[in-house]
Image (cartoon, rainbow, N blue to C red; front, top):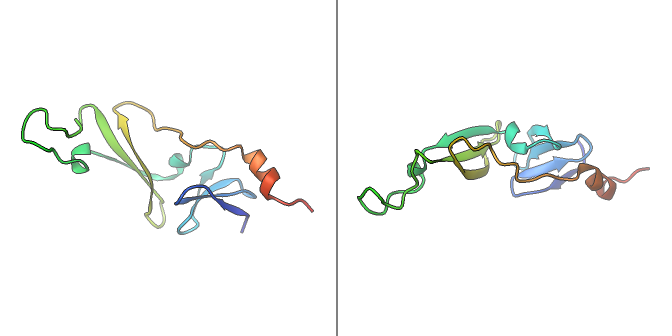
Length: 112
């Protein structure tokens, strides 16, 4: 097992293997040089299933499913929700964490 550093509540990076890993079950998701979300199961939800309308009217404070999607990202093994985001329809999945893997390796891996 490689040297793992916790990055978020649900994500670790294995510096020796240069992989994103699930913090809960240890599942290796994808290269740490790529967007971790691409290694997750992705579920696009109608935003009305998350945010209920406040009033019964055409404009009701609920997000319009014709405009946005609620996107959830899950570990393929244990099913923990790693991240979620609201995206406009047609908008690509955001790349919210980009690490300098080489600098992290310099800092945390001891060369002998």
